Amino acid sequence: MAELKISLAKPGLRSDGVSVWEWSGSALDEGDEATKWFTDFLGKPSRLVRFNEESETRPTDPHYATGFNVKFPDAFPYLLISEVQP
Image (cartoon, rainbow, N blue to C red; front, side, top):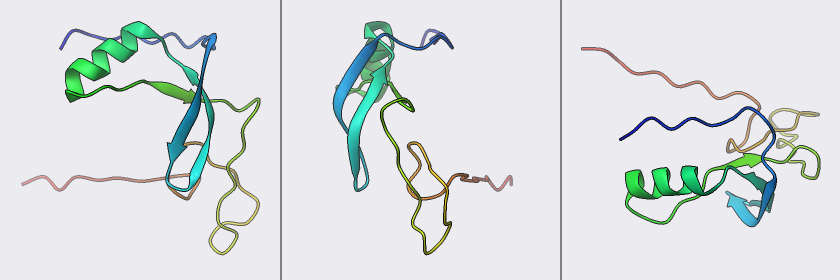
């Protein structure tokens, strides 16, 4: 795949109907170049979006982390991953 560069500036396009787990709302769309890149890479229609902090909120489950908001992760403000090396 060719390199994909995404600007750090706020995108001008908005996508409605974005959903992650039980949450749905609007997000900022990173545009057609990113759409083509991800669609080609994944082999199915895809769009790259950025969480829209100006119009959306997504609180954490108060049972686990009271008073925090997340963006697109499944439940918590921070997610950690690791990979075991042979």
